[in-house]
Image (cartoon, rainbow over the protein chains, first blue to last red):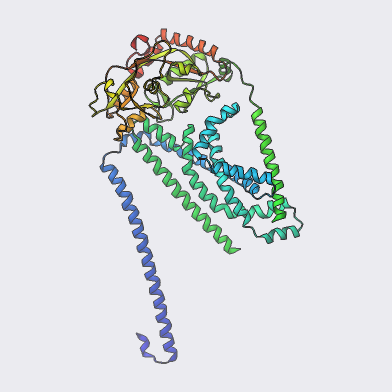
Length: 284
Length: 287
């Protein structure tokens, strides 16, 4: 408005810049407003859904607060065991996956066959069958198997299964390393094994890290299957206590909520990890 | 890639060979465990008992994660009189009655009925108590007698004597119980209480539920839609069980029989029964 006082080329240019700055500012403001609006509605919808479920359950008067008060501590004590089982299973699965991936990339037929056999066997049978087989059937072949604590058996079964799926992930990770790096390593006089250990694997592990995060989140849920072996994790506790007191609703509700919260928390952690890795990629 | 894959091959080859050798060694090195169960337990100074903690008042979890109930008390008392510590494992009931425990637990004080079938794989002591088997129906049902269940579906815990009775395969060795009604469809769930839970959830997949009178009464007391019908269908002798495929349980059975006799004559067994069932179920006359 005050621009009208000074006509002239320079002044016109100034008007133009100021106006466009205002426009940019206005657009940014409206975008922010849209974003805030989106977030508010998003949060409100979640709030309404959760509130509706909660109020519905309370209104139906089906939740027994006495049962929850008495047993929640016992059920929640399964959380560390669930996390322990999931984390150790993923750790062992990574070992299986590295070996499996190296086998799948081998050009020796026997080794390639061994790795393919493993992947095919595991991916071709249900996880629950594998778990029961390791628990109930294997001891009938080897007596020594029965001495293994069920926690270890459960971790082994989950790791054996996930290892096969992760084999393909690791194989892709290894194959993503550009061929030029192998030639460069060879030119530097590195042996094959050195190349694998110092050049390929460190980079491949970085590439597959986000995938490992996803597998871990899936593992938190699949770890519930080891309740079949009597491992006293979250689901085992919820089921026993629920049946014992005829309060399956509360017990399974608590278990479901805990699994949900756990996966949300670890998904957030996973997002942050991926963002940080992306940042360090940019710095490089 | 070719050079690299050669490296991969050598690397993997070593690991695979190592894993195979490890596996073979593990298979061969069965520990030279004692051939006698009693000696093994005494040497370990610990006896491991299997229990199904979904079966109150015989076995249930306490909020602090310990176990409680009639069977737990009887097992603990047996361990005490053997002079060893006790710990608990919680396999499924099917895994217990199937034998071949592979040493994961040493004995079951799990209200197991002595049957001819089970005796093929399980070594039993003398019975330590007796429970009647009770038929029940959903609370609103108009079925009034066991015979009325002919042609209907009846729910039982998997691998229980109740399932065997309905299948017509129950045989105590001494006497055979009366035959079950004809044309029954057997619905078997993981453990007895799951049947009552199904009615609680409003499911009507079956009309009857057969379990021990103590379990049926527990469901009624908990306010579930269950009612008992008719007289008990048969009485079961329940005993402590050992695995025949493991270390020889013969001397252990003799020892535990002696302990059970003592517990009976000094009143321990009867008072435990009063404590958990509010009646003395430890005499055969009660069945």
